Image 1 (cartoon, rainbow, N blue to C red):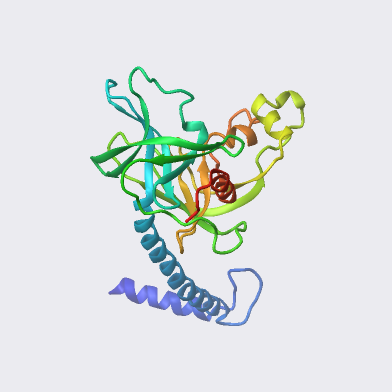
Image 2 (image 1 turned 90 degrees about the vertical axis):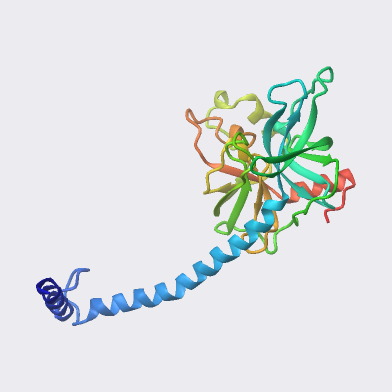
Length: 289
């Protein structure tokens, strides 16, 4: 009782004070008016954030059906399945896009090792044999085709020109599938659109992969403010509102170029723009859907 009266009295005195907490003398009730303005802004922004969160939740539930794990299967190996990266279904529902660098250069034919995708949820996992259809080593993209019935494909291409500051999300398997297939979603923004390789001040600081990509035609990549892990390589980067794919998360290939001169590489995440996926599909003669 006494505490409530004390607080009420203090609030009245504060509201009537002519001293502004921002410094200087200002008219009475100036600070409460600012609080009212801030409250009005919050009431305006919070519904927008709630709508964005609701849209993302709806989008994630649809996108997860198209996200797969990529790896190999060898019957005599223990365990037979080996996880390599994330991938996502496109086109007519029987093709998967992932990063090229995650795929093994050679398989073990003696041990009947094959490429595979893994679908399902939790411990209920199904593997399907897959083959390489096309590889784009410059943009670190791989196109696979898998056996069995089609899966729901994702749509390619942004609904509007992608700019720095645009909201994005990606779904994949950041830490692998040791405990089962549990896709994880991260959300953030496109923090920068910049060249894949940045020349170092000293030529000696440039390694082989960076020099090779600098000799070739450089291209822009998407820098993200959300953290991706090695297992996220190949994850679809998409619009939270539409689910349209705008890029392919790349945790290793891009980072080794952009941060070759850093003694301690950062935790920054990158993605390859979706136009390079569309170009790969066109060269492979696969309709984008």
